[in-house]
Image 1 (cartoon, rainbow, N blue to C red):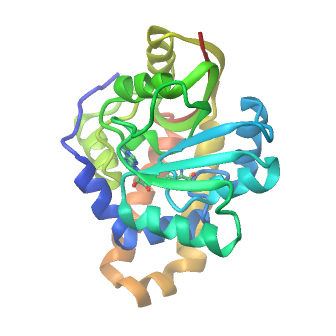
Image 2 (cartoon, helix red, strand yellow; image 1 turned 60 degrees about the vertical axis):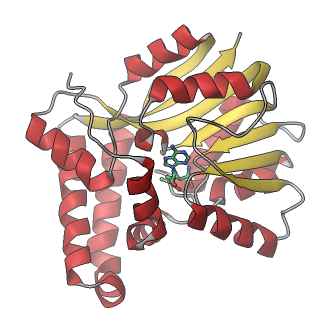
Image 3 (tube, helix red, strand yellow; image 1 turned 180 degrees about the vertical axis):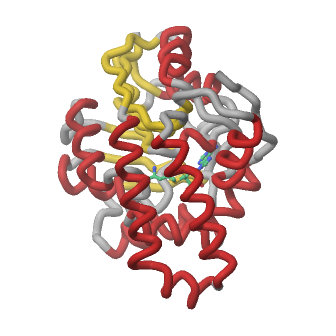
Length: 265
Ligand SMILES: C[S@@+](CC[C@H](N)C(=O)[O-])C[C@H]1O[C@@H](n2cnc3c(N)ncnc32)[C@H](O)[C@@H]1O
């Protein structure tokens, strides 16, 4: 499979999430900005074994929707880490408004250099965001370092599932500013080499393709007018054509999504 890496940096990610594209993702997916929303958060939480004693680190926490979901449902403490200042500030403001600041804090920072001491968290958590990170090995090593012994890594992510031409690969990843996507087996190898025991490894790619169609329909049937009036026709057309490429690639089995649970040993 291709593994060509594109030259995106954290500055590109910041530009996206400071601007209208970040808002567009919230319009499409809701404030839990991942495929499947709250339902998916519940599945991951059950598999990660969260409870009120859990100290969770959400890596790439964005607007903090999942952090608030977990704090309300499980009574656990959550720290959100995100590299985009605007997302950190917005997450903290929403959390304050919902009266959850006693359980949740947000810290600015890069997943590749987490601003936390070792052996701090029971769970390192991630949802549909690690595809933006430029070095998955280093990210997983950082997760391992900040986890307590026997701590759990639980995440979903967008993955590469089939071969693509260079042109397809570049168009898909460039639309999102992904430097590259990991494969399912690639993630397993990284976790094992880092020292995790694999507990679960699931390929959710057919559900991913189904959701790509749902998001495309929502953009076309519900959001077209509002996106054009707020951000202009050019932005709408760029989003529509970018999403269309993802719908096709997902239908053709070239991209998908995974859920992985591992344990620090
Ligand atoms: C798709 S959103 C994450 C959605 C969130 N996990 C959720 O489920 O609501 C992607 C987020 O990842 C953050 N991000 C991307 N690369 C990062 C990095 N290297 N370190 C920290 N945050 C990063 C972005 O700033 C953005 O807020």
